[in-house]
Length: 289
Image (cartoon, rainbow, N blue to C red):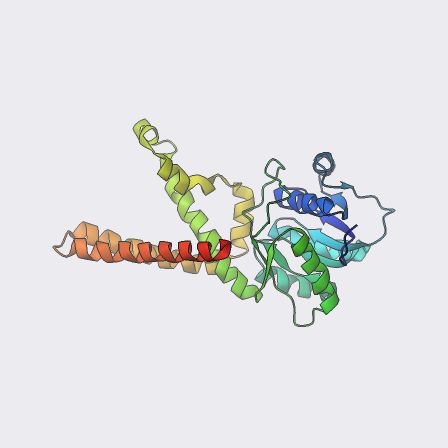
């Protein structure tokens, strides 16, 4: 058993994220019970060593992790708290502002709920990509309420530590603005680009190199999960897309006008992108150093 406030846990939702959380916890000696609306999913996760299917006779767990799509989080949280499944609750959804507000409106126990988001890539309905090391070294954002007690934060902090992640606290609206820039809007841009290769001329696909495949790789995410995520962060994502569209529209005008200054203007746009890429790479090096 672990020398932490986290000895028992219930994971609700046995997709890639939930199963990865469960694998990390069982690997650390935590007793994990698994719940999924599809009993076969919980059984499959259990077969991977992620825990055992939940039984009604089990006492309340130290922690309940709601690993469902954003649209289901509040309903699942409310039901889990009403059933007394645990003492502290958190979630893994990739949006936070609407969920935090809806949990308050729904009458969830906010003292026992710490909204969270492990930033380790999008969820997937299957368990093929589940991995106990999925969160190692990755950010795990918490968006606690002003009234969140220290004991609840301590329990969720133990979860993050056992998963090997790095805790970062943000206000819910700040979290959503950040992920809109880092993940949600880029996914839509990449999907729009990748869509040009379905049904296009065969030579487009035949001549495509690894560089392009790397760029559009993330477009293979589950459309239903991504649409749920994006609609829960609609405002911030639309703002980012508007900015990107403005830059692309301006670049299109430069190309169509064909003025003598076009090379200089295009270079300015490309230089901005180059500087952004350098800044991201420098940040990555600082994290791993």
